[in-house]
Length: 363
Image (cartoon, rainbow, N blue to C red; front, side, top):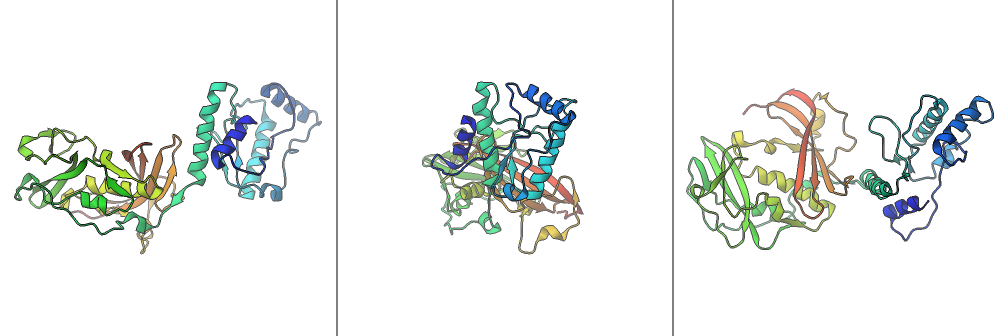
């Protein structure tokens, strides 16, 4: 009971009123759960116990905003009636359409008990269950307009530029203007963003660096080359490894959505022609519903939520997910998942192709 109290307080806070109703798969008491299940099986076989006795009416079940599933994951071949009553409860909950959550077994439709016998494991599963609840029920959706800049930002001039050449040079374009176009973001005091541009026969790429505010971007020939960039981009010795380290915000869900867009835009800053990739991604849903314009061959299940959305992951990290259509080479339907750090706006991005729709464009 103490563990369940902590769970409810973790979800709603401590100033709450109401009741938590506990349903058992069967109503037998024993000091060991294994012995209780064996007794349950034995009583049913002898005709002394009705296996569906624990079921309740749909009307009663519908009074609950959610149901935590936690009947345990242990299975024995002799426990046939236990599996039967689990299935009866699954069907009842499905018919009632009451939302459920719980820590699910990775391979079966079973759920770990919310209060493990090992004392040290209890805070761990408690944190996991609260995170699972928040991820499932506290999803915040955004309109497509939220992915666009919402401020008019003047592009400040940069300190030094180079004349246009084929190869790397210091560009006059200021990447900070991308960040300043989003109302919930800023650049940390003491830093600035500057960029190099690469050009070759009408193609282009760029690279953005976060550098101290009192430094100037050095000439490309004075820099070491970043082997992580496919064009061996110049990297100043005083530049940070990740420009997202200097992106700051107000920690609202919208700020994380804006930061995810800034991340992609800055990574493709200066892209021209064959250098473009992200620039052909169309974030869904669109006014003309571009997703429905294709005959998709699904690789994964179609997403339940197509709109850009925010939630907290199982470890408590802010997460932004959105879906795009990209038509370079092969038309693809893609899921982008952005997992942010708990303390800043650094992030890890996972792009997954979830469907294809034949040939696209060729530059």
